[in-house]
Length: 224
Ligand SMILES: Nc1ncnc2c1ncn2[C@@H]1O[C@H](COP(=O)(O)OP(=O)(O)OP(=O)(O)O)[C@@H](O)[C@H]1O
Ligand SMILES: [Mg+2]
Image (tube, rainbow, N blue to C red; front, side):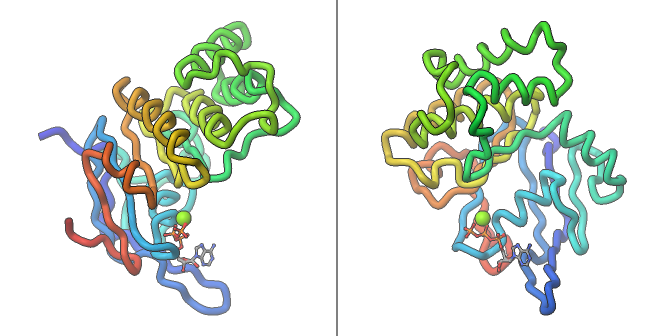
């Protein structure tokens, strides 16, 4: 069997702000390479915490996260940032697009940050926007787009560093069902290009495209 691209071992996160919140406890999880997986579960039960830990955005209280053979909990902050920048793309629930820039510029700036040579940024941004069906919106600003279109810009942008893992936190949380369907087609398209995709979702529709569903309750992984 293929080795998983992400594996966690007894992953635990306890937040301390005056009192303790056990957000995640002893989670052992394996994400197959090239798969499309969903993380589901009630609000406040640890899903975003888990996604942030496997993406190296935060550190666990205890336990380990392996990206292939690399233990993300054993490397320093600089190295972690470098791994994130090279291998992982994030899509957040609330887009985080830069409002003063056009759609094309939002993607170009991500390419610049990913170290793509200036001469290639423009062409590559056009390619990424074509991938999410936004070739006619290059010059629009985010506030001139629908929620679904903004989310698709966020996906194009998250692919700037050509990551092999795409982590999405409720990408369709604000969308109507038609926009959600369109977004799903884009996500499946990205997955079919060989990227491993992990989506946190409350949506049964999104869950139908997943090859694997992880259910988190009270900070623990429930057995399927
Ligand atoms: N930075 C933080 N400091 C303290 N507690 C936190 C912090 N972030 C999250 N928590 C707590 O940890 C628990 C898990 O939060 P998390 O954001 O992972 O939930 P979630 O499953 O993503 O919920 P939702 O579906 O509402 O997004 C919650 O009780 C939350 O209040
Ligand atoms: Mg969350």
